[in-house]
Amino acid sequence: MKIAAQLYTTRDYQKDLEGFNDTIRRIKKIGYNAVHLSTIGDIPANEVKKVLDKYDMEVCVTHYPPDRIINDTQCVIEEHKLYNCGYVGLGQRIMTSKEDADAFLTEIIPAAKMIRDSGLKFVYHNHHHEFYRIGKNVTVMDYLLENTSPDVFGLLPDLYWLQCAGIDPKRFIEKNSNRIDVVPFKDMVAVFFYKPL
Image 1 (cartoon, rainbow, N blue to C red):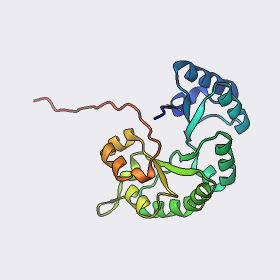
Image 2 (tube, helix red, strand yellow):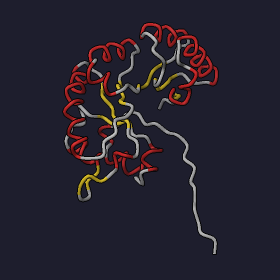
Image 3 (cartoon, rainbow, N blue to C red):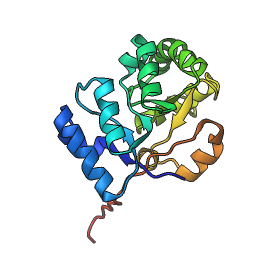
């Protein structure tokens, strides 16, 4: 098992090449040897790669915007191969209806197949809204999984957001283990509200 630092946490400090370099340097100094590449500034991929190599830092998975994955698929593939990263992660796509999910699948499946055919894997990062009900006992996530195959549509299950949505993370991972290779963790604080007697 490898543990990586999620760069979304440091997003305010990596908006340019100098900030990205300093961020990776500090993360390496803490003791991490891998990162989840996310929300960096508009830095050319070759410059990102130089910084990663400078600190001997691996990329375990990424967060890319849906528009880039859908409309610039080949370039996304090339960047991931440059980073030696096997997982193309989609950061977020809000869907609250069957129509939203259908539109998303129509757009993402051709890109996800290209990613698979290149030897990489597309993985979808959830938030809580994928667990909204869009039918009787059917959530957006249920619908996405029922209408995709594991070799094309992998998962990057965020345990915080699963818990936030009222989903048992352990059960979700066990049920969908054929789609999961990387798992994001972050802290959740339980807040209890009560009415005084």
